Image (cartoon, rainbow, N blue to C red; front, side, top):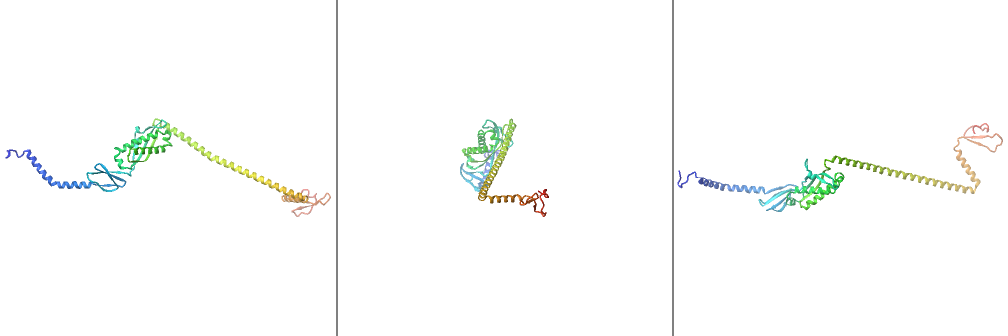
Length: 334
């Protein structure tokens, strides 16, 4: 049955009006509470913590306006945004592989002597300029990986396969690091390369075994050459030393003989001069000295008196208690 205004009490317009009225009254009562909660939430989210080794980059209305060091800081709600960057952590990327999975398109490279190698490299880096790192490049890590591949290809392309695989790896790493750092500086990336390390540089799998055999043979050759040089460096100085020693000894012997001969000559000259002064006395003295030298080495001595005449000559044995005997009796003693 219709009411006074000609509408049914269940009319949708009346129901909607009634609902909106109730909602408005409730919203009016809850409005202050919602506002207070929103303010508290905004204040709570306005505080942020910067840890040790981090730097916060502050943007006000989209433009960089400052930085914040480690500690608790406040930002203006809605107007300011904060990007926190760890500048002390060492990060890494991989070139030529990802974990256990190889990336042949990245790894396969051409050497300076036109040989193919597969190179796997790890690049370690850190963020040194947070602003440049955040805003200069859209994808800093992708740019770094692409630049690392370019740098490694450039250096490998100037290096022979022997140097790249064996003795020249250290130089390849250092040159690659320097070139990669230059590229990242040109991009103003805010990245500092701390280390470039070649995990492996090998020929392609199809020829790897044969190449390693050649390398081992070359290393064996170098080892034998070094051993021969070591032996040479040991033997030749010793031979020279021995020759020098023998020459010194010969010179000393020659000098000794010369000096002795000169001394004998001077002695003879002195004796001859004395002899010429008194020939008889000198001759007798020399005879006595000679007899002294000879008789001191004789075990048995026999003295014969030349003043006696006849066939029987007595003699005196020196150094014994025997009585004098005739020459015939002691013939065996002579």
